[in-house]
Image (cartoon, rainbow, N blue to C red; front, side, top):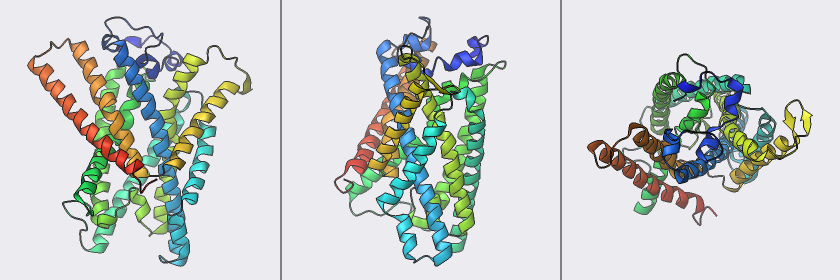
Length: 387
C-alpha cells in the first residue's frame, strides 16, 4: 500500500496522518484509491471511531499503569509485613490510591506528549517493546510456577461461577470485548507503515511484521491467560501480575516493566491524534516557541488531551469493563468493516458473487458479536452497583 511513496522524505509522511486521510480532509487521494472509493461518509465515520479508540487506549493505559504501581506497593508490603498486614489491604483497594497513581502517570505523559512526532520516538518504541517482552516472560513463568506450587489446576471449563445466568451472559459479552481490544496495533498500522523506508516495499515489511507480532502476542496471551486461570481460578485478577505476592522482587520488576512499557505505548496511540489536530486546526494558530519544537499551542492541546484521558480513567476505574467496552465498540468498524470495504473496492469484487456474500456474512457476524460485547461491557461500566 505504501510502495508508491518511496520518493518522499520521512518527515513529510507524518504531516499526513492516517486520521487525516480517513476524516476526509484535504489530503490528496486519487479517485481510484481504495480509501477514496469507499465513500466520504465511510471515511468520516472511520475517522471518528479511530479517534475514539485512540483516546480510549490512553484511558486504558492509565488504568493499567495504576494497577501495576499498586501491585508493586502490595508486593513490597507482603514482603515486609506478611500477607495479612493492613498495609496490604490499603495498597490493594481504595479509590484514592488508584487516583494518585493515575495522576502520577498522567504527569509523566504530559511531559512525554511533547515529543514532536512518530519519527522522534523510535527509541521510546524500542524501549517499550523490550519492557513488553520482559513482563510477558515473567508473567508466563510466574503463572506456570504457581500452578506447580498449588499442585492442582484451579478453575473450571465453564469459567467463573456467578450468581445468575444473566451475570454469566454479560461476563461472556465483556470477555469478547476484552479479546477484541487485545490486538490494537491495527489502529496505527498504516501510521507505522508510513515511517518505513523502501525498498523493500513498506507493505511487504508490514505484512511480515504483522504475522510475527500476531503469532508472538497470541502465544503470550494464551500462555498467561491459561496459566493465570489455572493458578487463581475464579479469583484471577484482570491484571494477572497483580495477583502474585512472591517473590516480591520479581513481581515488582514485572510490574515496573509494565509501567515503563505503558509510558512508551501510550505515545504510540496518542501521536496520531496529536498529528491530526495540529495539522487540521493549528494552521491559523500563531506558534509561540517555548523550548525547542515545543510551542504554546502544542503544550496546551497535548496537555489537555492527557488530562482528559486521566480524568476519564479516574472517573471510571473499572479496568476489565472499560477495556471490553472500548474493544467491542471500535473493533467492527475499524478492524472489519472499513478494511473489508476497501478490499471489495480495490479488488472490484462484484456484488452477490460467492466471495462477496462470504465476506459480507463474515462482517455481519462480527457486527453481531461486537454489538453483544458492547452491551455486556456497558452493563459492567454503567451498572447501578458501579455508580
